[in-house]
Image 1 (cartoon, rainbow, N blue to C red):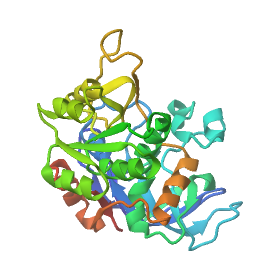
Image 2 (cartoon, helix red, strand yellow):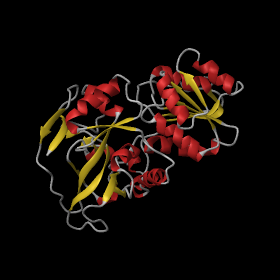
Image 3 (tube, rainbow, N blue to C red):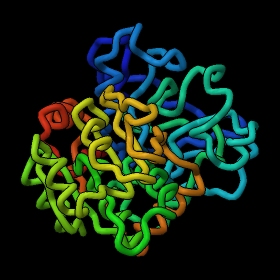
Image 4 (cartoon, rainbow, N blue to C red):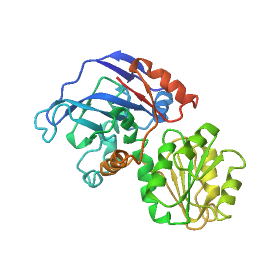
Length: 346
């Protein structure tokens, strides 16, 4: 089968032929229908060995946002049949520690011992014709959802959902939520905010095209990300700031903007991995403001995300690419020319 393999840090991945895996006991082989291309894949390509997380090591197949149909079942797998449409839950933990037993494998206590963080992140992922899933607990029924359109929901939908859900007590009527960066993750964050809360939604981005898209999806206000962004958001909130700021970029300018517009008692969720840092200490942020670095979400939350999509209340706007054209997708992502999410369709 074909697979997009990362063979070393700081090197471009290679589309190559590899043997099709056969599922062993407890394992499931998934024929991939859609594999989302994520900006974190670009970090994997660009990192040096010193910059890369110690829990991950090449070689492995990229792709951690995956959907498809069950192609084969290993011995002992029950409750599933060949041909079932499934989404693959992305973070693969030990399955035994307390967070894992709560379905929060994104917070597994033993990730440093496992050799990877999930498919496409140390283990072989879905940028291939097939993906070998090590345990049936990592599958979620997809139902009637279009598997290509649903692939980004497993990360680009799940991650902002997890971040926003934790802050829902702050989002009362009259509150404000700010989404910084309304591209692949951000355009879904806007929809999630619209569906889960009564908050006024302020979208922030560097391009008018993405801001227009965000308003079409439910944002109440759109602000260009420049030197005037913080005063504009302050004015929208009558000077008090926002209850929630979700930074989907995480670069230094955006985390500084988040710190400048959060209100006292508000919350900042830095979802993007752009390398920025928010200063924390007495007087450095508004009083009682909190900050978190959300990572993915639980398998139960993925079910909730897919339920929103099945109800027609959440969608990923996708641009489809053949596996042979996968590097074109990443080039468009690097150039900022994707409005929604790129999905590879082996």
